[in-house]
Length: 99
Image: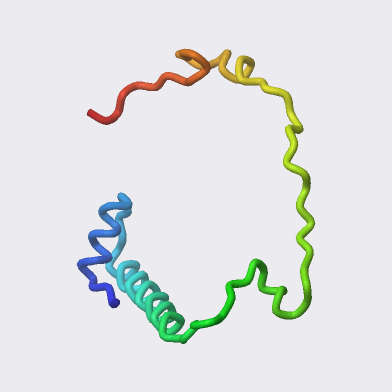
């Protein structure tokens, strides 16, 4: 999949970016290079290859050191919402932006 200069222009427009012509050319080259690498990776036959949880798992057995999932701070919702202009039932109220 190769991008065209029109694709770059559309992406820049959607991202609200104003690109100079030399920037668009450089971005086109970089993105097409990225897609070329992805296509090479997709061409590799990975049938029967188990996914790894960590890249070092190929070299040695790994035991991930994970901390216990416990609450470490108290609930401070009310204190955090004191400065909010509008709150209802514990939620911040914001102006409607989508019609």
